[in-house]
Length: 349
Ligand SMILES: NC(=O)c1ccc[n+]([C@@H]2O[C@H](COP(=O)([O-])OP(=O)(O)OC[C@H]3O[C@@H](n4cnc5c(N)ncnc54)[C@H](O)[C@@H]3O)[C@@H](O)[C@H]2O)c1
Image (cartoon, rainbow, N blue to C red; front, side, top):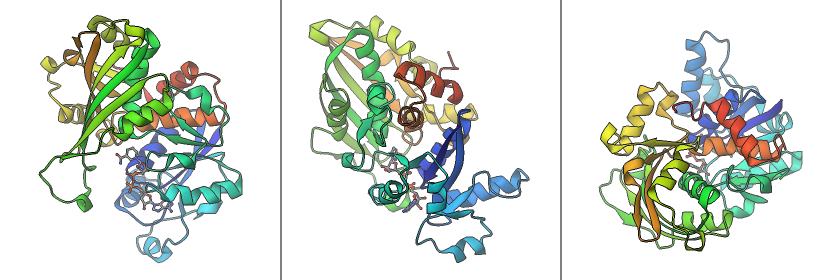
């Protein structure tokens, strides 16, 4: 059993913890955080509702945490951040962007592997990682950094076409949710904002898939339930990818849910509602959505639109990261298949 810890039990961290708990070949040793946030308080309440003596996951306190605040709320903690680090093989760091680089000093001291999320600089890790596109590069690596939510979903779909038919060029437009649900600190806004092109997701895609030329534009939108990306892809060496070929490839991918507008999947909110109706915790979806009726040909190019559930999309690829860093499987196909099995990916087919 590979022993895993999670640092930062926020939007991503709580989902990483759940994801690890579902992997039957990994053990979640505990989580670490700085403050008794609402997520930690909800975790305590979940334990109480389930009749547990403590919380579902053991909590360790980061340096600087005010213990009296945890004591006042009767939130139990097992030890310090260093205690957690000493008990694991690999830490999944989902602390706020930039903090992971500081935490890395502790991981280095303890000689523990770590996987960072998209908010950290690429320089924090040895390998910028995606479970499908470059799994083998991560084999045995000490420090991995996951792609951001948009890039993770984008690469899933581009890699899918690339693997099946070859792709040498893509252009993307990202319609980006501006905040996660409950992010009051982002303000109450009603405006769109454009980033300087090319967007970092296009640049990141080229870092992970250097044989693909990518560019793109990103538009921030005042919504919270998912990003939408439109992709224009060009087949390798001008070999045309038809709409039928693209659909076949997407349908064969276990982390892509192909849906139709005519069935009621009108937009980002339809996915969120569907995930809640499925009874998925928090309305999470590990898979990206891909609209069958968005796939169109334009000359030699193929175009399509995908939905990115930003809060949960990076969880499967992070599990792949543990598999690569710990050499649990030697290739992407077998590693992603294990992760998919435990997370129930592809079960809707
Ligand atoms: N929110 C998203 O949709 C999303 C999607 C993909 C990737 N990411 C990336 O994931 C990372 C985490 O983002 P988030 O949205 O989950 O943040 P968050 O603010 O929701 O959670 C961060 C948690 O870390 C805790 N924390 C603060 N200092 C810490 C420390 N020194 N050590 C450990 N924990 C500490 C905070 O109390 C908080 O609970 C960032 O790199 C972000 O860019 C976020």
